[in-house]
Amino acid sequence: MANITIFGAGSWGTALGALLCDNGHAVTLWAHRQETAEEINVQHTNASKLPGAVLPEHLRCTSDLEQAARDADLYVFAVPSTATRKTAEQLKGMLPDGAQVVCVSKGIEEGSLLLQSQILEEVLESGVSVGVLSGPSHAEEVIRRLPTVVVAGSAERRLAVFTQEIFMNSNFRVYTSPDICGIEIGASLKNVIALAAGMLDGIGFGDNARAALITRGIKEISELAIRMGGRPETLAGLTGMGDLIVTCSSVHSRNHQAGVLLGQGKTLAEAVEEVHMVVEGVNSAKAALALGEKYGLELPIVRSVCAVLFDGKAAKEETKELMLRDKKSEWAGLSW
Image 1 (tube, helix red, strand yellow):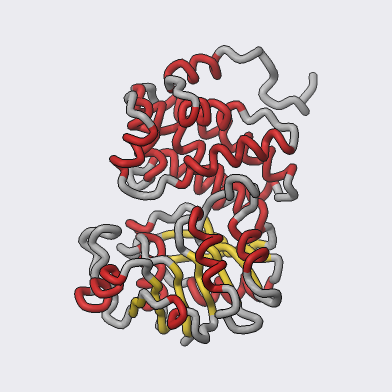
Image 2 (cartoon, rainbow, N blue to C red):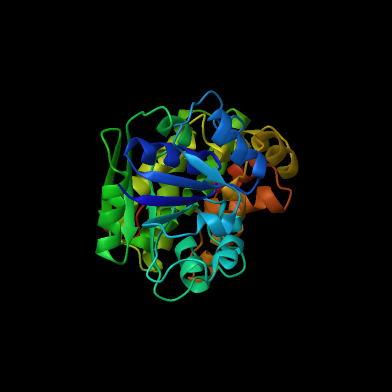
């Protein structure tokens, strides 16, 4: 049995907490709101995040960050990506030397253009080991013990293997990988492409358009990831194509939901309000576009998403612009 702390009692943090309790570990959740901690401890529910789910009675929750930070074998960051830096700054100096940290949040920080693992490495004390856990994994299905497969990534093999051992069970299979960059770029940009997929559905386009978007979307994601040092194998795997497929098509995807509303003509503010949860792709879109410019990549789908989100462009018009781009070969490297 391991002692595990999860920072963030949203849907994903709570679902992972229940999973780890199933695995026999002692789990402490940290919630930003005291009311959430009391609900989890007393009623064994987190109704606003996971409606209908009954949580393990031995899953404990606290709103005291210092208490949550006390000695644990593994610390899991599950706060929204926009809160990763702030939470890490509050924790600076609290975590023990040599702490093992796994981030399950997905996103690129606007301004710094840092990945989640890079933020943690920058802010937390030296000696902390940082890894990630990602893949096609909606909390709504994990809490129901439905089969899910993900990948644990770290530059340190021992942390990836330890994460695999801690999380894996008959319902939750975990692979390992050293390609933390590829994993995080795939995890972040799939939310941007999912916004575009939702827009297509909101407009009323069909399966052909969605399939084309997913295919060309993985090309953009792969180009950026490889330019930043990621591996092409990673983007063909769980946290690339796998995560992209599920996020672009699932009713559980908040990014897809927001995209549908945008495609129907809602403003960004209206869409985010109606989804009523953090839409990670909104922040990642602007950062992804900036990374594309930094590395000399065009990323036309990402650019069109940003045009709808931030420039007031209509999703239907942006789709037309994408369809009428200059003629070209599908793969520039292939020749007759």
